[in-house]
Length: 319
Image 1: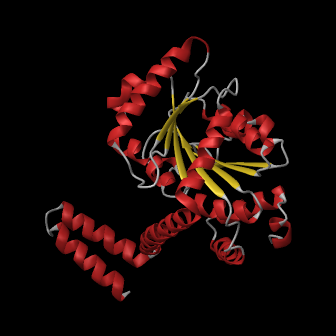
Image 2 (image 1 turned 135 degrees about the vertical axis):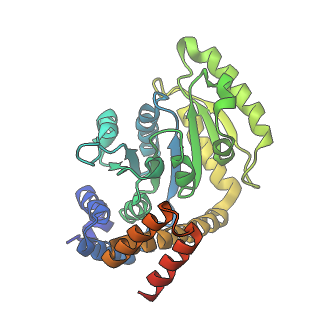
């Protein structure tokens, strides 16, 4: 049983247990997790949700560790939900991010949770949204969601955060053609990391190329996508990243962020309905048998796919 008072007081062990509960696939745990989520529904309305992505090797973990420590120095409580690739053997999280953020994970004002992607599309854990709500209820006012890398996950994470940031390497400016147009359109900021030493000039060049490319894109009428550079390793310009996020909040305002979150919740509801329908249909043994029979008839050419699908849906609705 989750101690609600301990959770609200910010007890990290209780928060970890609560997230484990919502990640459970057991039916009794799902009922308990829904009851818990209803109790903390209003959460921390003043929180800020930041999504961070970038290809492997771009330095996401180093950036988050040092940026997280800077946020704590500014009196924030930081929660990091790192979407970790699932182990092909156990299905559990490989837990790489927690070991790479050693200093941050030991800070009492921070909470790091590597969440197994469980093979879901793009590597985004299904329960990340619920985990965000729990972290906010526990008093963490800065929530960072880190994705595995560039892919479908970007579109999913961008739809659950207030600000979406893409980290790039100093030499990636020449690779603009290989970057999906849709991902650039999602970005509220592009940050060229590792802008230090011999790579500093390359970072300046890449920054100019990204700035030029982004003139064509604008997904937010109130905010023009920023391009910046930093060195997470030396903490260069880390304070400027924070200033940029504050500028974003002041520019778009609380009303816009709330309106955007409401839209995200509507999309979340729609997606959940689809997922639950699929789950219920697939867990019904009679319907599973019918589906197998109809699939065989389609494969053998006895029935058209549209006829078989209609028959399946009709019987599923009656059932």
